[in-house]
Length: 296
Image (cartoon, rainbow, N blue to C red; front, side, top):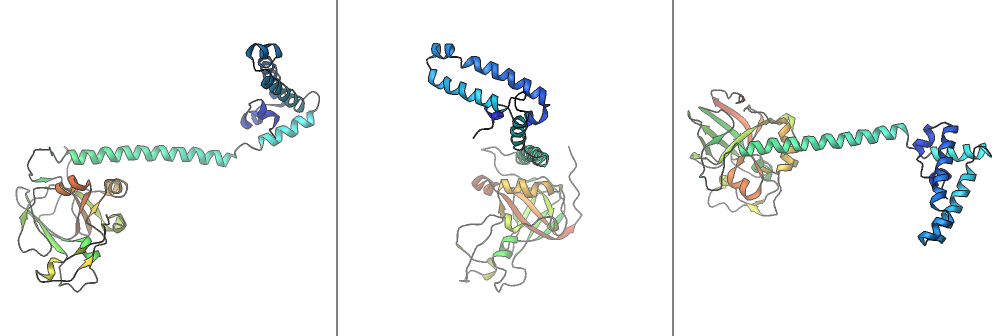
C-alpha cells in the first residue's frame, strides 16, 4: 500500500526536511492543484473519466490520512514511516564516494590512454615506412643481460643448460640496437624494437598479467636441432594494452636498472596483436650507466 506522501509525489528527503506546518502547506497546495486536473468537468473533456475518478478518490483518501488539522497523530505516523525510507547519511556518503571513484577512474583511463597513444606515436611509424632504429631511452655504448620471463616460467622445471633463458641487448655509440636472442650465438640488428622503460620487479606482480596462448608446444633453442622434448606454453612475453595501462604504465620509468622488467613496442608483434612486449628481466648492465630520459 502506498504511503500518502508518496501519492502526492513527495520524496522522503523533502518530507523529513520540512517542518510539520510547512509540509502540510505544501500538501494542501499540491492537493488543490492535483484535484483540478482530475475534476469531473476536465475528465469529461479529456474522455478519461473512469481513470480520473479513481485518481480523485486516491487523492482524497491520501489527504484525509495526512490532514494535520484533523488527525495530527496519523500525519506524524505516516510521516515517520515515509522518512524511514530515506537512505542513511552513511549510505548517501558511500554513493557520493562511489560516483567520485568512478569519475576518477574514468579520468585516469583517459590519461593512461593518451599517454600510451603518445608512446606509440613517438615510434614514428607509418604504413609504408621501413623499420629503423628506435629507442625512447638514451642508451649508448651499453649492453644489457636479460632473463626471458616467459621461457623461465614455461620451462623452469626442464633440464636446461645454465643460462638457456638468457639474452643480451647491445647499444652502440649511435644508439643502434642489436639483440642476441635465447640460444643464439650472434647479435642481430633489431631496428623494429622501441623501448618504453622499466618497472622494478618488486613493484609489480607480472606473471598474471602476461598473455596466455592456446595449448601448443615450444622447443627450447638450448636443446639443439635434434631436441625432441616439448612443453606446453603457459605465458607469452606480451601484455595487452588494457593491462599495460592499468598495471604497468603508472610505474613505468624512463631508465634501465637491474632487477627491473624492460618493456618495448615490438613493431611486428604490435601490428599483429596490439600487445606490448616484455623484453625480460634486466640482470646485468655493462658499460656506461643508462640515464633517465630528459623531457624535450
